[in-house]
Amino acid sequence: MIRLGSNSPTRALILKNFGIDFIQNGGDFDEDSIKTTNPKSFCYEATKGKFDELYKKYGVDDMPLLVADSVVTANNKLLRKAKDEADARAMLELQSGNETSVITCMIYKSKEKELIDISITTYEFDKFDKEHMDEYIKSGECFGKAGAIMVEGFCKPYIKNVKGYESTAMGLCAQKLIAFM
Ligand SMILES: Nc1nc2c(ncn2[C@H]2C[C@H](O)[C@@H](COP(=O)(O)OP(=O)(O)OP(=O)(O)O)O2)c(=O)[nH]1
Picture 1: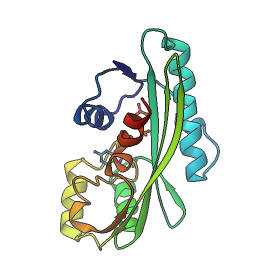
Picture 2: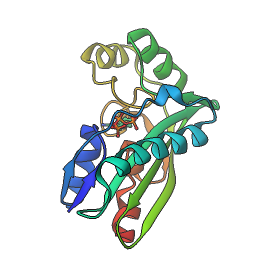
Picture 3: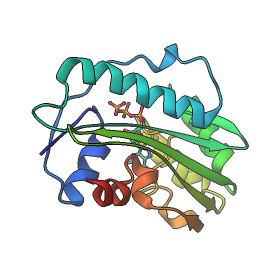
Picture 4: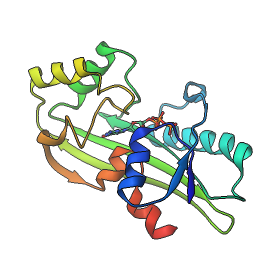
């Protein structure tokens, strides 16, 4: 059993799909406190901030702690979660017909060992269909997700090429976690 230090329904789904038993306790780390706009540095600092908060609160004596953060980058821009429909549209238009990378950092710590991992999955997307994109934005599914994308949902039909794990792109590199645990 591990503690998933996250509010993310997607991260919970990933652990469930990979058969990892967990309880879920999210934190309140303020990612707006991070100054860097370098995507990888931002992702690491967010993960470290989440870890420090939850390690202080729960420790790892009763079970290992897992936290993570994901950001998206396209044209070297840092894309976090969309604030509103206009933000989501701008993020999606930037990624339409473009190359997009999802960077996921995770920290796993048990009494015996610790993993800090930064994994990247890169997609080459076809141009997004405008009507489909409008529907997706209106559905609200674009919110709460880095870069406003859903690689297993909205983006799936547009994937021309992918390098890396889908789990990484969804928020937790499960394959590396399982290999390490
Ligand atoms: N379903 C889905 N979710 C995605 C995808 N890409 C990223 N996400 C989700 C995973 C995370 O919940 C969210 C990225 O935001 P954060 O890493 O800040 O995590 P979040 O604030 O959701 O939860 P946490 O900080 O762990 O409590 O986006 C995707 O392609 N599909």
